[in-house]
Image (tube, rainbow, N blue to C red; front, side, top):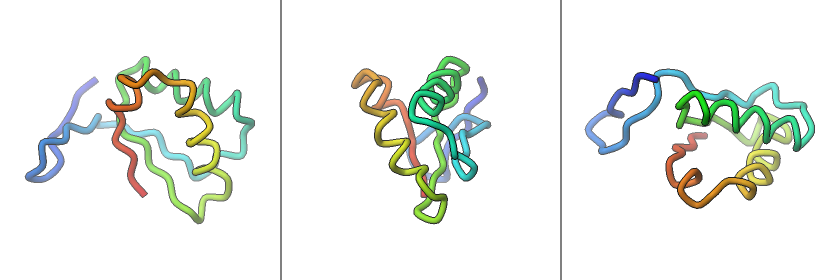
Length: 77
C-alpha cells in the first residue's frame, strides 16, 4: 500500500480509504470488511453521522481490534 503525508501533519494516510456511507451490513460483515481493509494496509476510515448506522458499526468493530490496530487507524468524519 502506498501512503501520503496528510498536509503538514505527521499523519501518513493510505492512498485508498474505507468509506462507510453504504454500510448497511451487520456488525460481523462490517468487522470482516474492516479486517480486510487493514490486511491490505488501509489505515484511513471515513464516516459521518449522516451515514446511518456507520458510526455505531465502526465503534462496535473497533472493539475487536488490538490496541495497536486501533492506534494505526485514522478516522475522519
